Length: 346
Image (cartoon, rainbow, N blue to C red; front, side, top):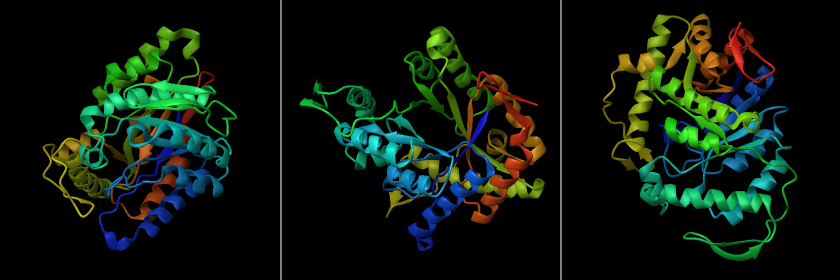
């Protein structure tokens, strides 16, 4: 099982400054590269102060310029917000500028506030995403592409420059049945149980495994990436402090993900959660290094190829750097990559 760091921005205080936020994220990427992580992930979100990254491809190029080996995953590029004729060319350039370390995660968008304000409400985002994905794949694969659909109509054109390799595309999906169908279509999969329980994670993994098995040899290259809040703690008091911080973070996240979407001057209003702090503690992976090995073993055994650690929920920068380093030294060596790119706990 490979390990990745989600470089998600959390910006609860505007006085901290966007320049400092992204400088911190770049420092985390350099640390991950030096510690032997396989990749980092970059979100795309606009107009809000969590997961705040309106320019993911620009940031991917910046990360590549200051790291040596890291793969850089867009997690995710929100296709309905873009014109595929522009995005296709930007992806080709970003792949070249990152020395072909780019992996493109794509999705339909998740936050109603954001999508409404950008003119693509969630009610139509699935339909527009489906057509956008078809257009993007055609533009990357073929020359002289024309289109006559609901959202795209254009005469023959060729994206320039042409791709110099097949850029890996990963589908962001949450619902197990949708994971199964996207796997059957040949896509890599990105998913997350968010703050869901262990069984929900197993349902997601099992859906991927079922789709991949049905493809046989044609699906041998496909991978499953799973993202979750994961952070090392020193002791029980430290664990409780970090769980409370994560619980507070989700009071904002839930507002825009499943709630009313109350945002004022770019700042998401924290709302009371239906889930208790104790339930949050059960559903997140915040624990000591020895406990972390035990908590991650079921992920590896289930068949997760890449575990993406979401570490930014309000913890100080120094603590995030320490967690990245300690995880690399005390947890990562306990997992061994097999010849089938699966993992098991040693």
